[in-house]
Length: 80
Image 1 (cartoon, rainbow, N blue to C red):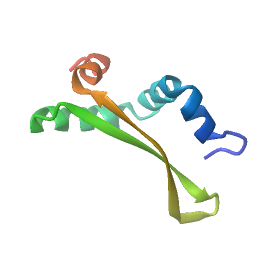
Image 2 (cartoon, one colour):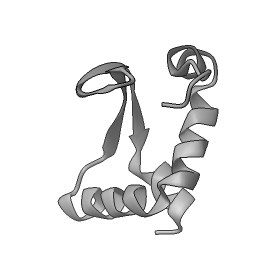
Image 3 (cartoon, rainbow, N blue to C red):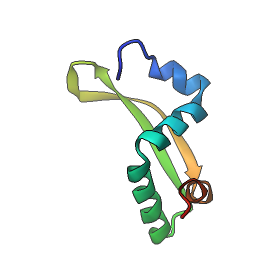
Image 4 (cartoon, rainbow, N blue to C red):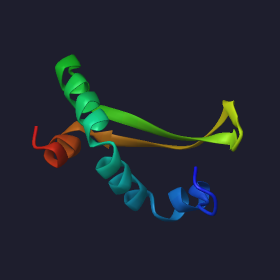
């Protein structure tokens, strides 16, 4: 987490923008998860957004929110 960015507030106000940023920055991971979900026959994927409870503590995290995305939408984004 970068200093100065309040991810909790950003997720509440701009969930679509956060998803678009994650799709851009982690496209390979998300495409792999989407392909695995297609192979398994799943209908949707649930993404969870987590953050460190403290910047210096890499063991404790806080769940900021979750988001359910349908596979047809993700397949369209990745041209699968």
